[in-house]
Length: 286
Image (cartoon, rainbow, N blue to C red; front, side, top):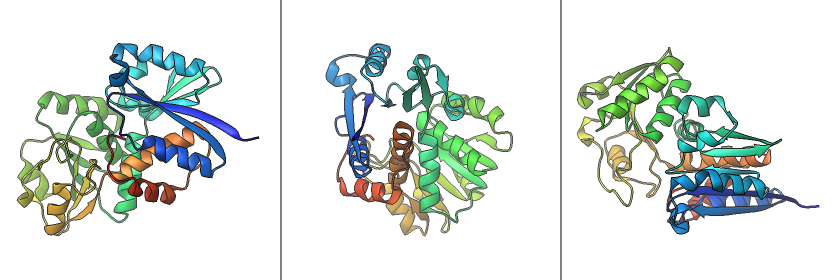
């Protein structure tokens, strides 16, 4: 008898998400009748206040779990029974599993970044890094670097309060990593192994550069979370400056890898999912 798994994604403006295709194909290859529903707040004409009811409905209908994306990742933690350790540290979740009458919230964004980074730059030193962006994605990336062993992380954001909030959130959890409020990009990059970028700048909707590319040095690495387009202006300019780069595709795929395993208990074929992701062409948020 074929095993059936039904999951979904809750968020706003998710019609172009690549996630359903990644999950469904990998499920079918593993002999699973896999259904992935898009639950788009925009299409439904509702706001974040509808989240608890939508989660309740999915659980009643026998979903194995849900992916959660903007603008619901932080609000969703109110509606689960348990949080994974990383979900608790980050204060946001992108995956909910339903099992044994309990809901557990997980965060696979940080691990998606870490696994994508290490796949793309396996030998990279991360003792000292610069991070641009202190929003939800930035917090996940900062947590990932601390877990990977970064000793000093300079955090920059146009909103100083977000930088302070990130440091307040993570510093006590990572005593071996010093989080520094970024004030001078040139000075921070002088002693850094590389730069991570975690803002929407460089996406199709927000083209441009997040910094003066002349501040980068040959031999540094540059890591991007933007994956549409996969080659942002930042990455193409960084390559011309002699930097090693990793695009945002790895993070996008590896967060899906983590969620798929949580939903099914099956370890997917990572390289197959990465190849499938690359074949999907243009897409929107994961």
